[in-house]
Structures are given as C-alpha cells and as structure tokens.
Image (cartoon, rainbow, N blue to C red; front, side, top):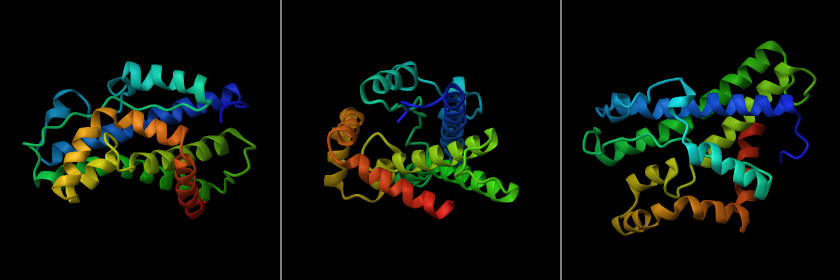
Length: 209
C-alpha cells in the first residue's frame, strides 16, 4: 500500500489522518455531552487538538508494527469514554454516540468531494498538491467510515448493532470485546475480509467521485 509513496504524500496522509481522527473522536464526545454524559467532556475530549486523542500504542506503535509486517498501517485513536448510566435513551443513546464518529468521517469525505467539484479539481489526476490532499481526504475518510462500522467490538458498528441485538448476541459481543481488535486484524490479514472492506469503500467512492 505504501511501498511507492513519496515523502510529500506520506505527510499528506499523516496530516489527513490526524484531522480525520480528531474530528471523529471529538464528535463522539460532543454527541455524548448532548445526550447527557459529560464524562468525555471532563477529560477534554471535545477538542480539535490531536494530542488529546492519540494513544501511544494504538495510534503510534501499532501502525508502525503493522506497516512493517503488512505494508499497511492499522491504527486507532484513544477510545472516548462514556458512562451508559448518564446517557439518555439507554442503548439507543449509546448507539447514537457510536454512530456519530463514522458519520463525521462520511461528512468530511462529502465536503472534500464538494470542494473538489466546486473548484474544478480532478482528484483522480494527482497533478498538484490540492488534488492529492482532496483525494487523500476523501479516500481516508470513506475508509474510516466503512472500517468503523464493522459490527465487531470495540469498533463503533458493534455499539450500533448492540442496541438492536437480542440478549444472547449481546452476551457474545461482551465476551469477545477484549479480543475484538485482534479478531479484526486476523480477518483482514488472513481471511478475505479485506477485499470486502475494499469493495464497500470503493462503492462509496464511486458514488462520491
């Protein structure tokens, strides 16, 4: 994935990831506050400062390891805390908080696509820095939107599914949550799950572009 990337492109990717990740996590915290839970707000997570959302392992060490092993970075931000006892609407409120993050990435991708159309920039032709930035912004945010909606704990999609799942499935989801991220990595690396994600991401990109 990153084998032939230039330094300029790498800096763009890092910058876009930081912005997208920050908006994603801050949106979780903001929606949580609006639904009555100020846990994340008290920890300063309603912030556009990327440092508030960086986890030393998940955001720094893990992508370095996966980049070396799989030639593609896998990373996550510091989880946004919430207290389900404070959130209005119970499990549905928790699902709304979870869905807010991926939806913020979809909104960012749509805004970038609108900017490209409004300025006449062909993002599919990387002939200037603006086209590279806009294309990277669209692709990475669509990828974050699709990836985070995977209904496997601890990803956001699992919290959305949890709100509608029957109790036996909820029990299973609680049991696998400590191992969920390793399950996801295994599915992407060993199984054909990566192709499924790529297909879904491409479908959204085709619609936007």
